[in-house]
Structure formats: C-alpha cells, structure tokens
Length: 273
Image (cartoon, rainbow, N blue to C red):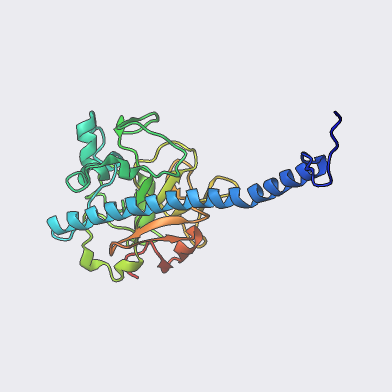
C-alpha cells in the first residue's frame, strides 16, 4: 500500500549556510565587545589586589612609627648600608624595608604586585657592581631621602648631591624625619608602584622620575634637576595608565603618574606641602 504525505506533515530542515554565517557573525561581534570588558575586569581585580598590598604595607609603616617615636626608617635597601657591610641574607634584611617592617608584615607576598611582569626569588642575588651582594626585591618603591650621609652612609654621591642640591632636602623621608614634621601627610607620596626601566629587579627605593609608557625609558619630571637613570626605580603606570600610591597618612589611591609632580614646590615627593 502506498502512503501519501498529508498537508500537516512536518519536514525536518537544517540551518542554511547564510543562517550559520549570521550566527557566527553575531558571536564574533559579542566576543569583540565582551573580551575587552573581561580583560579590564581582570586588570581591575589586579589593581585592587595592589591597593590592598599597599594598604597592608602602609599600616605596617604606621605601626613602625608608633614603635619608633614617630620617626621614619633611615634606609629601605641594603644599598644604603655602610660600604662593605653586607655579606649575608640576614644582614641585608636589616637595611631593607622588608626587614624593617617584618615584625608587622609577615607575608612577603604583599611586596609582589600581580600586574608586575617580573618574578623574583627571596632574596635576590646581586648581579651588578655594588657594595653588597644580596638584596630583597620589591615591586613597590619608597620615597626615601638619601641626602643625609650621617643617616645613609652608603648612599651614592648622586643621591646625596640631588637631595642636598637643586631639589632641596625636603624630598622624601629618612631616619631624621618625624611624622609631625610632614605638613600635609595626605599629600606626601610614601610608597608606590615602581620598576626599573632596564627591567631588572628593584630593591624598594624610589627616585623622582617615571617610566615613559611609549619609549620605556625613564624621564625626569619637568622642572626637576634629577638626571634620569634606567638603573634606578621609577614610578610606573602599571594599572590602567596610572599607579597605585600610598600616602603618609595611610590612605591609598590610584593616580596618573605625571600628576605626582607639577613643580619643585608642588609635588607629591615634597614633605613640606
């Protein structure tokens, strides 16, 4: 017997090539829209982690000040120790900011920024000519004033000349600085995202210069007498074209790198603001 298909019979049909292309095009458009959003969300999460790191370090600094008559640390790296004094890990730590804050910060991971491309062991052997052979690296630099040779006997001649010369002695803090001596703690840059332009590991100090995002070299701020050096730690726009910065009053915020310096008498390095 022959069967006949009725008018109500349904037929199975697949997607046409045009329909498939339309679906693929829609998916591609959505991906192009969403992928940058996902990338920005991931970077925002890394930036928030960086902020939390700086808040923990800043809190440790405030505790250090409380235990030391509100007087800041004289050194933040072993480079500022007396020449020839460093010969092992433990001795180097005494002059490192990580060693000084160790009683208050037990997690070394807070000194590693999640957006930094550099990785480092703990501690890091020195590779260049210096007065020491061990240092404790950090992705964050401190606004230390090396201009007092009595406090920083190992400081380089360039640093001493810089801080005692054109820029003045009010840039940064050292063991001769008390918290009360800072006129505007909420404006004084104390700790920030830093890196060396030569992409080697930083020790924790910070010089008034920044890494140019186009050339990758260090630049001096307009009006500054500082001679830029790719072998010195500088501010870096690590998070969405800006840096996370911790200030002397304990607060942390994101800031455009170039906005930290306007003139010799109006900049976030100067403790007399």
